[in-house]
Image (cartoon, rainbow, N blue to C red; front, side, top):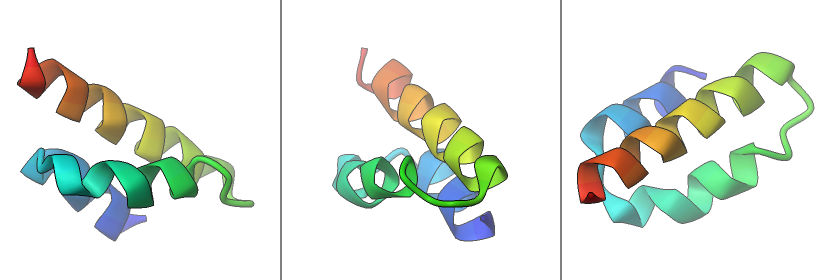
Length: 46
């Protein structure tokens, strides 16, 4: 989960694919953090 959070904080668009895959994780917290990380990357691109 920390790695998922870090990918979002870095904001690198190369993280989009692994974060998208994390949205299907069996652990709810991982899915939530992945969603927030993707939103962070999208916000940084704007």
